[in-house]
Image (cartoon, rainbow, N blue to C red; front, side, top):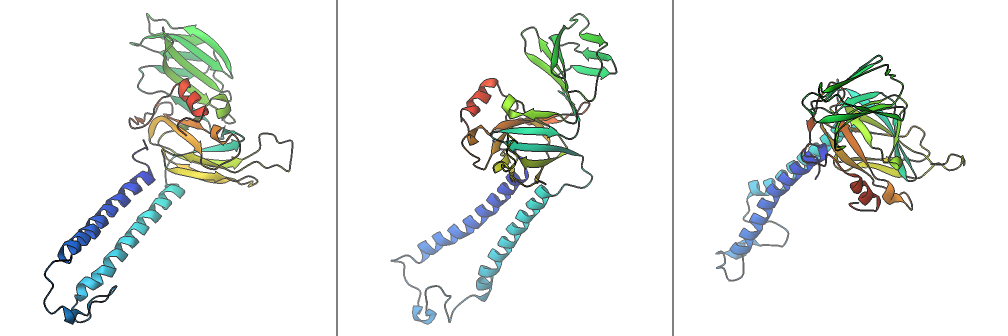
Length: 331
């Protein structure tokens, strides 16, 4: 189900409204004419004076106002629809003034997506009643009135498991130094290993890849500026510049081509305002394993912020969903 507040979904609703209005008048007049002038209906007196010719109004008896309206009204409708379409292009391809932005580089390869973080992002699940505080060499995790029992702290890919003090509903780790230049992730689980809470820091230089099952992560309520590049997986051949891709976010109604050999790349904008997990597709046939060019984008809340959860779209998914998509399902 497409996100209901995307630019093109709103534009679709407006076009559908005016299409229905035009259809009502067009088919309404058609049925009136069919009933009024069908075979067997008593003809109008003095029909000869009308000099009716196919494709033209009667010469001697006509309605000037109706004839003018016949041309003016459709022209107004076409101009109005064109203005709405152009306004949607402006909304999609121009960054709104005074809006916070988040810039990221998206690289299409054969056959997976890479997400290169040129800005740091620290995010945390809101509304779980669990809070992570990590300053200096002290890490505190508050989980009062929750079922949290276990915590996993991953720093630069090295994971360490801890047990939560269920009596106090918290855990304090001294000597665990926070380094803004390292990828860090904290996950909190209950006794049955159900994920309850996630806190993550993505430093500048982080690379996430759909080849490893990783998701693109973007903050909500910020304009995402996506710099798109197509690059070969193997750079050993300098004459090979990769293939054409098209980065498509179907639920947001936006996509843009990744042009091989174009050093500056291309740019695409989007402003997600609801948290959730949304699909990524490639809209350009890019070779034998084009069907593998799939992935997900997670819209998260920056640490300390909160965002609405979109109940009209897929918010979570399981490993079986990834496997189904990898086999070509729902594509």
